[in-house]
Image (tube, rainbow over the protein chains, first blue to last red):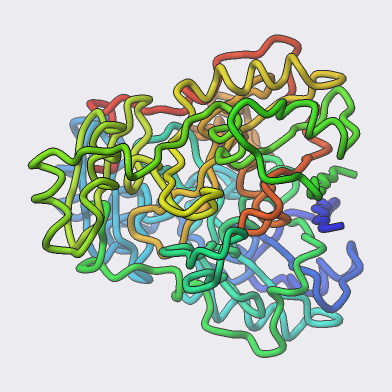
Length: 244
Length: 244
C-alpha cells in the first residue's frame, strides 16, 4: 500500500554561523538511503552566515522612500532590495520581489522571525541548490535534501512551504503523454514533487522555529543517485508565465 | 515525536453518478476520529453527476473564437466559460479562470483526463465545501474531509494539489502575534493547513486516477468537531491580493 511518513527531527539547538549542520542533524536522526530530509532554510542560512545585523545597514534613499509610509525599518527594506533582482509590487507595505535566484515571494525571503538574535535578519542561502547538495554529501546514507521557505500565494490566504533548494529528489514528476486509467492521454500534468514534500514536512514542523527539519519516508521512487537539476528546475521563466 | 502518516485508499472502482461514495470509501478504509480523508475532486464530481457529455454542448461564438486558433474543442471551451465567473487570461490556448466558487485555475477546473468515458468532461463540484460536509457526515467516525484539485501556479513549474472543499479541518493555522523561539512576535504567518494536507496526500496518489483518495493521520490538532468555515476561508478577495 502506498504510504508516506513524515517525522520531525527534534532537539536541534539554535544554529550559528559556521555550525556543522550535517553533524547536528545526524546526531538527532537516522537517515536511510531513499529518505528525504526537508529543512527550513533558516537553519541553513544561519549555518552559512547568511544573516545581517540591522546596525550594519545603511539604507538607500529608495529604501527610505519605500519604508516610510508604512512605518517599516528602512534598513530592512534596504536588505530586501539588495536581495532582489526585481521589485514586482510594493503595496500596503508589502514588497513582492523576484529574488536573485528567481523566486517570487514577499520581502525576497528576508525575515526577522526566528532570526536568533534581535536586530538580525536572515536571508535566503546564496545558492540553495548548492547548499542542498553539500548537505546531502555530508549526511550518512546521502538522503535527498529539500530546503524550503514559506511562500504566500496569489488568490489564496495563508502560506505553504515550497522547495528553494533540492538535491537528490526529482523536483517534478511528468505525467504528460501517459495514459490515464481510461486510456486517454493526459495533458499538462506535472506534479511538483519537491513542493509537495516541502508542504508535507511543514505539517510536523512548528512555525516558531523550534522544529526546522523533518524526514519524509516513502518517496524513494523520486530519489535519485545523482543530485539532479535542483529547485531551479521549478522556476518558470518570466516570459513563459501563463498566470500573470 | 511529531509524526504524520499518509496512506493511500486503494481499490476504489470507477465512480458513476449517484454512486454512494461514502460507502465505497468506508468499505476500503478504516477511519478514526482525527483522521483527515483527502480526496481528488473527480470522484466527488462523478458521484454528484457533475459531468458533461461533449455531444450535448452547443458552443457559443465566443467559445469558438477562443478555441479555433489553438485547435481546441470549442465545446470544451464553452463548458469552461460556463464554469467561470471571470476569464483572467487567454493565451497560447490556456484559459486562466476565476471559477464561480472563486478559485483561480486553468480551465475553471474542467478536465477530460480521468473522466471515465471518452467525450466526457468532469467539472468541479457545485459546492465543494458542502460536498465535504456531506461526505464527512456519512463516514464512520466523521474524519475531516478535504476535496482537492491540482492547480498550476504562477512563477513555478508543475502543479500542486490544493483544497477546494473542506469539512472539519481548520484550513489555516494562525501564528500571527505568537512569539518565535527567540521571543520575537511573528508577523504574517498563517499556514494553509488544508493545502499542505492536500499536497501531502498527493505524494501517495497517482495521476492516472487509479488512487484518488488518501488518509492523513497525525493532524488531529487541526481537526474540529464542527465542520468549520471550509475552503472558502482560503480565498483571498480579488481586491486584497498583494501578488497580482
